Image (tube, rainbow, N blue to C red; front, top):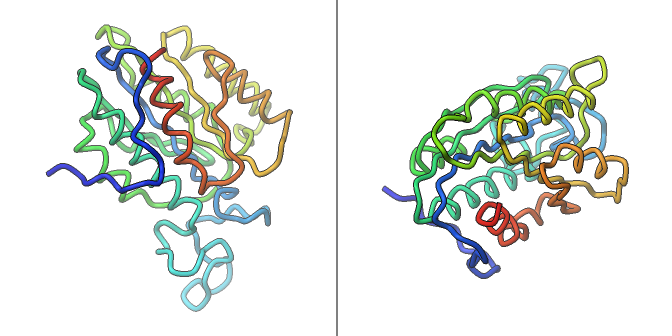
Length: 237
């Protein structure tokens, strides 16, 4: 049964370009410590307290949020990801979605499948904490996106920081992975959450992007405001 779309305060996006071209989209979701740490620098590993986790709650966990989701920020990321799959799933063309989660490393959570299959998997994502490995995330997406089916391939990279893994030159590794994916025909769309106007981080995200655009917001609660421009980006690219 189709998932009911959560009402928002924003109008339903109306793409300015064709919604009839076929596409595959890999959604890469950041689960690193910075998502839930509140600026403390904690890696928030498994959203559990470092000392006697049976008795104490992790400093990263927000009240009234399950341990699996850990914090309101990650709850917002899950809601935004579901919204984008739901909206793009309405395009009157053949399309498939895949999910990659990443922190210190990356994991393919779901291969290419329908919106109906993908949405429940997003709802069940468990926050991990850790460092930030954009290179591994992009490589996992590249590995699942076919180059032979004639569809446009997209990678949406949802993240809140610059690369910190692998240990040697993490940003260089991410840029190399992005260049390889672009050569394979993937169109990379960075979605960047940054409370500060960090020009260096934005410049890094632009280098990962296929067209130099970065869709950025200052807080996780504002992600849904990007829906119109992201739907247009997919329909016009």
